[in-house]
Length: 261
Image (cartoon, rainbow, N blue to C red; front, side):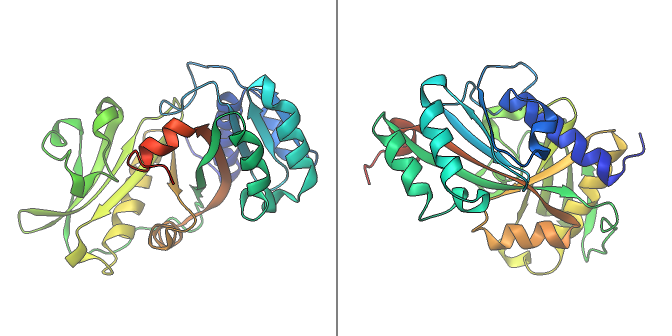
């Protein structure tokens, strides 16, 4: 399949609609949309559905996918502030305070990137690179590669590109088949080899390989992770949408090491 940038954005919105239980064209509206979250077998595999509260924006409005009992609280919140301010402090404290009364907290905040085909170009690498497949990952589920691979969902890790200094793996980009039409890229480079263009060269090559499989590559980063965001931009990816998700207090505390903060 020959993709255009418009095709890629349309596929991403279609997947977001599956995840959120809305219509793809809801993301293009100027008015906010609130829908009831439901499980869907075609949703991204790592999502725990139904959501209690998940906000999505492609820049035009907010689509809120919520448990029904939070509909009024969330509707009031996203109606009160401009779209972009709903995803940041100090405004998000308003939503967090209301949700916390029922044992929830804002947990995940992330920016998602899609490739701009006009900017996706092969980059030279000072190191040898090699295309990798699931059988090559068996010994790589270690902390140094945990941004590229996920041990808990290793059955989804489907394709990768490694960079080698001699026989030693020094950089790895890999992707997980998180849903039918979109594969997510993760990247790790060993500290001594950073700032040499390794990450972007691997990210670009993997993105091109994903497109050859008729899948859309996507990339996720916390907006405070400047190193990762810079890699996305250098690799020809551009910001496409943002999400903010509330989870239970217990879930948040577990992620914080079990300590109440």
